[in-house]
Image (cartoon, rainbow, N blue to C red; front, side, top):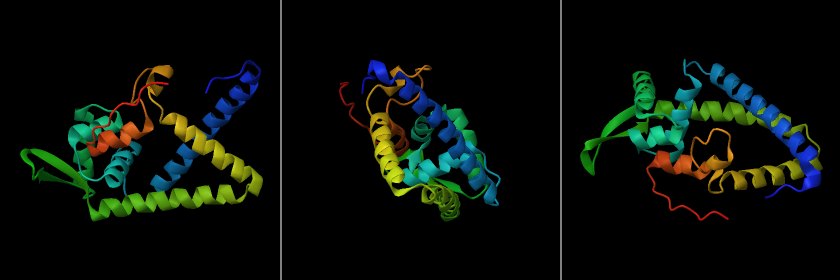
Length: 183
C-alpha cells in the first residue's frame, strides 16, 4: 500500500499509536511472565512459544526463527532444559541431529502466559465500543497481512530479520518456504 500525499499526518498518527500499542503489549507480556513462578527471560519465553506453536525443531531452525545465532539459541535451550521446559531427542531420521521439543511442563507455562495475556487484552477490548472493535479488527487483519508480504526486511531501517512474519514460524518449524515474488 502506497501512502497518498494527503495522509502523511494520519500515517504518523498510526505509527505513533502502533509504537504506544507495542509498549502496551510488551508491558502485558512482562506482567504475564512475572505472573508465573518460573524465572524466564523474554527470549526464553519466545523460544518456548516458538517450539510450542511449531512443534519439534532443530537448533539451527529455532535460532533462525528467533532471529539469533545458534550459540545464543543453545544457551537459551540449555537454560530451558535445566528448568524441565524443553528436552532434546535424537532425530529418528538422522541420528546425528538433535530435535528440541517442549515438555508438558513447558507447554503448561506457555498456556498460562498466553491465557494471562488473553485475559488482559480481553479487558481492554471489552472497554471499546462495538464499532471501534470492528474497525480495529479490520485494521489489525490488514496490518498482519502486510507484515507477511515479501521483502519487509528491506523496508525497515535495520534491514535485519526475516522478510515475513510467516518466515519466523516456518524457520522455527524447519519448513522450507518458497518465496513469493515481490509486488
